[in-house]
Image 1: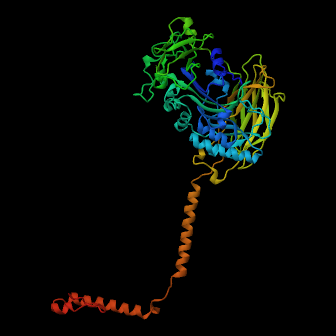
Image 2 (image 1 turned 30 degrees about the vertical axis):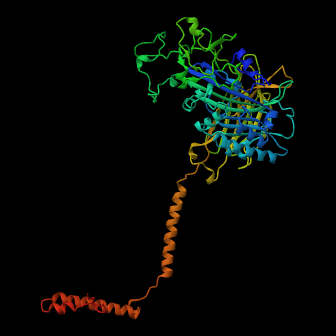
Image 3 (image 1 turned 90 degrees about the horizontal axis):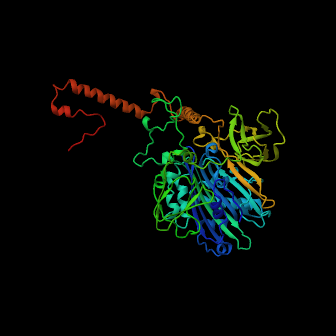
Length: 615
């Protein structure tokens, strides 16, 4: 089985977790790790295996049937899907969990190896795969069209064991939706893929309100073939959820949903500062004063364990020094590992699990060792836009190597929309403090230009950074003008640009020719394009309609109406005028001569041509 490198997991947990026997059908595990700045990392992992013969016979057992049928229908050899939101604070939290292998950029990422003879057949299967996954996970994956799909050359390597990995019929496609909002509609299908459906085990702690209230979260679905030495190949599905919870915000009671600042007398202040007084407070370090319970963090207890899980894998592990006191429910067996920073708990299937981590005592040594020191990442990366105006711009990526004696080699990949036209000749890499370009930093470049409204730009750069150095990678681009119908409803907000994917290559001596990759993503960018005033079409339509109505109405009136003089009218009009005049004169006589006429004579005065009605 291929090795996976975990930056913060203990040695014993690593051995039992990564090198688990392929014959084990299903197991799950939750790892909790307190982080600085009142944060808590919770990593949920669910793994299920199925042999190739069982898969071909449609005997899925613990393998999710809905996902297996999609993979089989689309001819997928290996699949990786990511739902992510938030930002991982590497300066405070250290290295990423799972060495970044289960992390994705903001939004949705999907890459897969498809079995197809031609590129057209691969595109057709890719379309089938994205549409099927869109319906399965209630996401907008069907919007991953040709403009959002690329074919990486150097960045991604298969995690599974592919005997014919270099086969020409294997196609790698990568798609990303940086504007996709991850919500509870994506979590519910995720839980339905589990054997216990979130009714038992660690999955009972997954709640949408807690998950999407976290500072950073990532949901990963990985399907890959595993071929152990001397054993039958299996198809492995791994579902992972990583989230960083704010302890203070998570402990807020349900009857107080609105976060309110604490009173002044309850603020934790550092009294050792010389300027501390009754009206001046310097915030104290929260690292050593973290106290929480499992029910406070997740809002509920853990309902036993899933009866289908492998009993040899402990369901819950906590990454804290052995000097910290931890209290658990009755009937739970605690095992401390040899690394002195990890302890795991064995739970019976019918036990409601609760864990309490109190604040450390006032002992200086205990306070100092209250948290496991975060591991320094191999590389720090920041990306931002440069320039001004709506016509041109630039991208600057700051890459910093914190190691004092190790050179870092990595692959930098960007998948840009077609309306960002890169000037490749402006790309340069320079070390901080040097004004000239260092050509030796960039070892290899792969660039695939964009086609308007057909495909996006693809840029892959293989670089190296000297020890304790900071490198600036910059290039310029031109902004295109979109058509009127291509702007979204919130056009003035801008257009999301997908995060850059950085794959750090470290030669694995145990396997010749294989590389163990450490992955990380930069933050997404918001590109502002020239945006027209969308109220002007309305004004033009109103003005044009009014002008046409006046012109057409007047012209139609002139063409249809007939103008004649008063003495040229028809005889019928003259007779009608005479009858009206006679009736008016008769009315006047009747009014002024009323007293001299009898009632019978007055009743006989009627209009000419009008027949008097009788009862």
